[in-house]
Image (cartoon, rainbow, N blue to C red; front, side, top):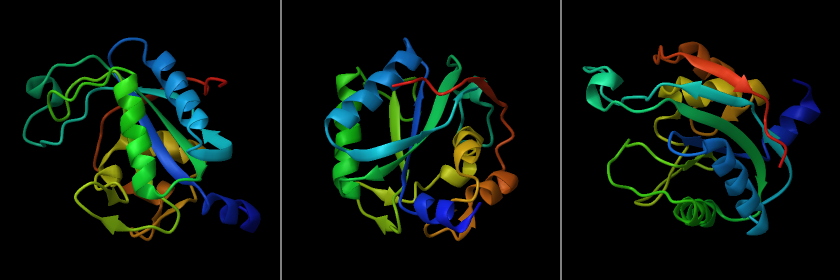
Length: 185
């Protein structure tokens, strides 16, 4: 990665979208459109392709299928130049999730859409509402694989490692398969 590209990447915040109920691809497009309309970011967006993975379990003692059988997930990572503060970005994400039918019945349960703020330029924070960088991003191959597609050299604030380094060390052995290019929004 050249110096100019690396500087530009440092200006980006990172979003991971996921879902496994309904028309997930359409939900991703609607989420991006809504967030753009709300003024959450400036252009350009950096969008990974769409990736399919099995349900990820936070419990290493059980397989995900034993814990909570769910349909496969689609995931996509999006880089954006933020125009809102980290907490206001989170609030916008939660509003769009609700508009798109997200119901939080169970932690790690099936969902129409999930919008996770992975990291924000130069920010490390821990509050009741928001932890940055996302506290489990380094454990999730379904996050790191699409992110590495578009920004492998991005250094994650507070972790001191690039996305590619985190992916190489990721303990998650779940299969993550690229299923399509990024949709045009």
